[in-house]
Length: 83
Image (tube, rainbow, N blue to C red):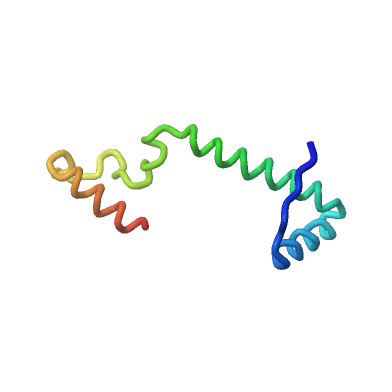
């Protein structure tokens, strides 16, 4: 299906350089890029809530005795550090 997209000069130049480097057309670069981007977005949306925050949680056997009583406070601190 045909689709028309307007690009700024910087993006068009980047697209053209990429197509020349890959020895392919700009249309092919756009198709590959959109396919990759959409796949990553959809894969991210399928993540379970735990998957999205597991890097914020302590590892098993952390040695901390206050995790159950201060869990909300600890998570809030880690969220603030991550952003």
